[in-house]
Image 1 (cartoon, rainbow, N blue to C red):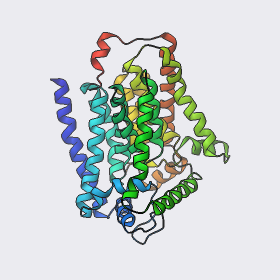
Image 2 (image 1 turned 120 degrees about the vertical axis):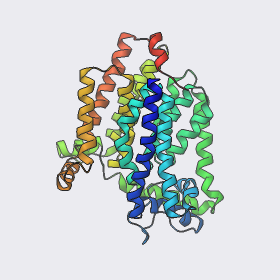
Image 3 (image 1 turned 90 degrees about the vertical axis):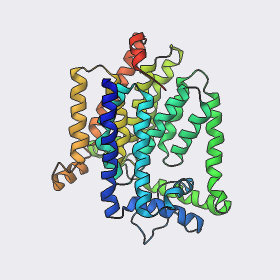
Length: 379
């Protein structure tokens, strides 16, 4: 009964939060959603997707495939399309969390991720949807639904590149070959999908322009570990070697675990590590991206024993990541903290703790007790 009451409280509040977060972007005709909508209309008109436009500021950062995926929302009136877009993002992450862990744990994780989800929706970003697709990839691959998992991770990858890291979930199951084959087939389909709307030659030129945008963006490390290294050491190292080190740290415990017996709690903890990794080592990460990291932290805290040290870490995350970028602080103080990239530090601390926990469990050969097994559910 307590579990139902918890969900019954969070669900309406979640919907209200999603609706209220849409009011601001709707009022100011949100620039990000204008870019997304314009991608579809530019695609069918064969206008350069990545050229500056008088309709909006900034440039499209996503693939030509994204221009097709956003079509259902571009075809709607702006306000209704924005509302549907935000509800999709909010609903997807709510549902994904509920599929990954037990109802009681899902309530905890949802409460933790809620503030950052609101921040992402206020910018009409797709980060909550990306987090949901990553979590759903884990859920479906754990169910041995390889093609569905491949579809989810490839759709996320063709929106933003970094969800490709979720392909490592194949190492959580005994035979990942079907998943790898599915990823290849789905990737080919998604790559040629926009060619059904426009000519293949023109679409290939747009992919070339998209890669050029990615190359330029690689010079700005955003809210990432690479930026912290730059600020701390005053160096201008390329992003990719640091990202490679982060990727090796990420997958090392997963590779070491291959010969161990399945442990569902350990697997979920690895998912939380990957969600945080996708923000920490993403050179395009910005403040709204942190809903992905907070989804990881929420799941990590939900499945972990409530020790004083974990409560302290969660408090540090709330203050150092959530509050510092919220309207609770004066604008000038918030901008100064943003320039120091303080928001990244607490997430990095939790990520390092998760690495320690993953390796500690491997060293101790910790199994999953029957009582714990009932608490963890992949539905």
